[in-house]
Every structure is written in C-alpha cells, then in structure tokens.
Image (cartoon, rainbow, N blue to C red; front, side, top):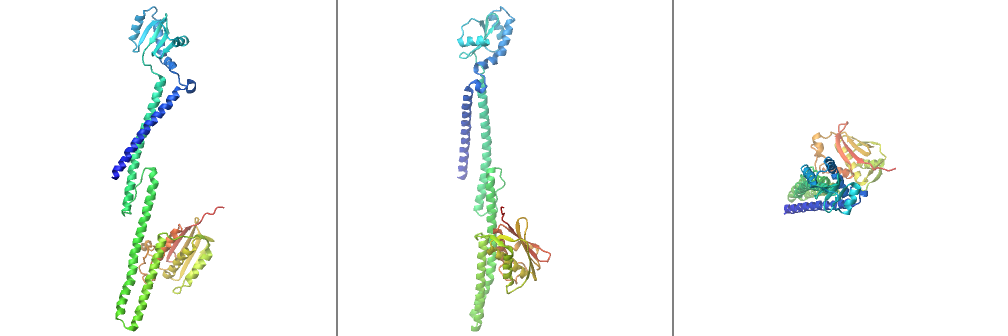
Length: 440
C-alpha cells in the first residue's frame, strides 16, 4: 500500500511538471509575440516588408543583371531560360501591369515592392520589364525568429523538466531509504544509520536522525549496563538477607537481635543503592536543571576540601594551584563532582592529592591527581560505566555510580572529562568546562 501511494505521488509529480512545461512555453510564446508586434524603433527588428526585400535583394539583382545582358528578349523566352536556373515561382512581364497602390509606392521608393496578401514580390527590370517572384510562402523573418525563440524555450523547458524528474527520482529514492531506516529504528534496530545522501535538502534530516539514533542507542546501552549492574548490586544484599532470615528463625533470643541489626543494615544499604540509582538516572537522562553562575574559584575549592578533610574514614593532604579567579558552574552539582573525585583520590591514593584549576583555550580546566597505584589501560574505558568496580578494589565501599554521575554532570555543563596517568604513579582526572564569552 505504501509503495502504491508513493508511485501515485510520483506520477502526479510528472503530470505537474509536464503541465508547467507546457504553460511555460505558452507564456513565453505570448510574451515574444507581443514583443515582435512592437514597432521596429523599439525592438530593432525589421518589419515584414523590409525583411522580404532584404531577403530577395541578391536574387533580384542577379535577375536584373541577366536581363540587361539580353535586351529585347521575349518575355516567355526570358522566363523559360531563368526558370531552368531557379526553383522559385518566377515570371517576366511588362511593367505596366496593374498593381496595388502600396506596391507602386514601394517600387517608386525602393524599386522593389511586396504584395503581402498575394505573397508576390515585384521588381523593375531593364527594357520596361517587371520581375515577379511568387506567389509563394516567403520566409518571414519575424515568424521565423519567433518560432526559433519559442522552440529554444520549449527545448530548455523540456530539458529542465527531464533533469528535475531525474533529481526527483533520486530524491524520492533517498527519502524512501530514510523512511526505511526510521522504521528499522522504530522496530528496535538502533544500530541502523542513514547512508550518505546526495540531495542537499535531505542532508540535515540525515544528520539529525543519525544523531538522534546514536544518542538513543547510547542511552539504551547505558540503561542495559545499569540494569545489569543493579541486578548484581541487589543480588548480594538480598542473598545476605535471605540467609539472615533463615538463621533468624533458628536463632536464640539473644542472637536474634544481632541478625535483626544485620537485616536493618542490609535494608539501609539497599535504600542507599536505590537513591544512588535515582540520582544517576536523573543525571544520565538530563532531567536535572542547572542553575549556573559565576563562582569564586578559591572559595568553591576551599569549601569542598573542608568537607573532604572532615571525612572520618580517611585523611589526605591536598595541594592546590588555582590560576582562575571565577568559574561558570552550578555549585550544587559541581560540589558533588569535585568532592567525588577528591574522595576517590583519598580512597585509592596513598596520602597526597593535587588539585589544579586554570584557564586554557577559553576553558576552565580542573585536574585532580593522586599518588595511588593507578588504573590499568584496559580498565580506563570502564570506570565511567555505572556499577563497575575496578579489579582489586572490592574492599572499597560504594556502589560504583560516582564516576558515572560525575561524567553526566560534566557533560550537562557542556564539558568533558578524561582519565590519564600522572608523574606520581597514580591517575589524573581532567575536566574541561567552557567559559562564558564576556562582551566588552
């Protein structure tokens, strides 16, 4: 049904262009007809009579010269002799034959007269003779020129119509390809993309659809990873709770209190896990609303460092190098970002972290470095995935969502974050945030 509808549309498209082509030719014909009807003084085109005189002047000159070399020759003899040489209707007669007044006036003025109604040309010849050419269909230069222009315009219109139809075929084919890819995306094949196109009008559509498909595929993949991670994270406390309930049923009164405490801790752990999942979901699906403002960099850094240093489980020496007076951020969310990175430096580092903020290429560049064991190259690409913990760090508390949340917040600030090795043996997290352009 879809194909039939598309073909019908294309057929109507051809009918439309053929109609336009014919209408275009008619309009041009009428315009040039009016143009050729204008006076010679305006158009510069000779009128019909003058055109005929100019066209047959060489022939008449030749006939006059020939008759002058045969004086006193009988009319019929001259006619028979000349008719053998020319295929035009030709006659030699006396110059006293009756002629229309307009023709006589022309003969007196130009020695050549044209009887337009009868399509006969008259010219004086030596020895009181008259040359008659016609009747015949003279080649009217006005009509000939008008036809040539009309034919040229019709050919141009036909050529443009053929080219347009061919372009339309290509456009229609590429549009059908786009529709096919969109249908595949709708069926869940999110890896499908629209191939390069030649129609300029469809290129923007292709870019938008491919970008949308890539973002949708990335979001679905993140959701799948998150669900897999959630299943793993929830499985452990649920298994512990199941075991504790079994033991609780068999325990003495004194032991029940301990098992109830463990159950409460596991329930609390699952509640915190749910809160972390919701926070990540809000960040990754861009449902958060940023309230960005210019923040004093030193005050912002000092506030976050103070909270990190107050943590009861670990302590770290933080070296700062601030070379940027203010930064354009949402302090509520960027506090969490910086605090998360510094806490990671405290968890995974030895005893020192280095924090730098500077202006580089009109961007605020924030680096957090630690002197820990570093991250293997084959695991660096995984650290921003939710619920992913690096091998060898299973004893570290947390849900593995922190860096996923950090990346989501940074990207909402139109920034980027990457991880690399440093000269202290640990890792460096580098955040780049665009600075606002201040017009002077």
